[in-house]
Amino acid sequence: ILNVEQSPQSLHVQEGDSTNFTCSFPSSNFYALHWYRWETAKSPEALFVMTLNGDEKKKGRISATLNTKEGYSYLYIKGSQPEDSATYLCHSGTYKYIFGTGTRLKVLA
Amino acid sequence: DGGITQSPKYLFRKEGQNVTLSCEQNLNHDAMYWYRQDPGQGLRLIYYSQIVNDFQKGDIAEGYSVSREKKESFPLTVTSAQKNPTAFYLCASSTLQMTGTGGLNSGNTIYFGEGSWLTVV
Image (cartoon, rainbow over all chains, first blue to last red; front, side, top):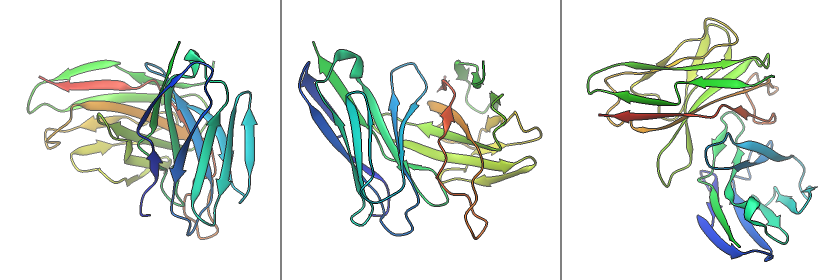
């Protein structure tokens, strides 16, 4: 993987459903993996920074895991709410802050 | 309150004109960045600066120029050489974290401004 890739590109879920999406990144020369939440008309906000293989971080209903050996991170949202609707970005890179294209999540009430 | 201020929020540019987007931060961050977002694409790095009076090209620097005369300020000029300037531009900053070989690494969180929409008319 030459760049950071996120999947799916967009996702619609019903309120109350749990969901997850993926960030894939180059596993060589890994330093850190960041997740951001970007609501429309606002600045992206940091969710998690993870550096160690096997790291798991949690903030309320949102959690993330990291596998540096295979080069991926999962972001999980448990019991999705309409206010979770946003674009979720990840970035990684040893000398450049390389972003994925983001996953656009829409939670339907 | 500490933060990053971008202006203007909306800007219209005529063909052949240069325009400058302002970015000011009061977070005392050493590093600043400019990104561009096009529909359906991620954030692409235009330029970044690690220290005053120094800056580096990102992945899509052609047609853009920057300056870093003060730690707080990192303006971006979109020149007439930029063939497709219509996009959403985000400025960001972070504390500086160096690798053992003196390069910049991605260990620190980036803080973003609210962005500027540029449209060519």
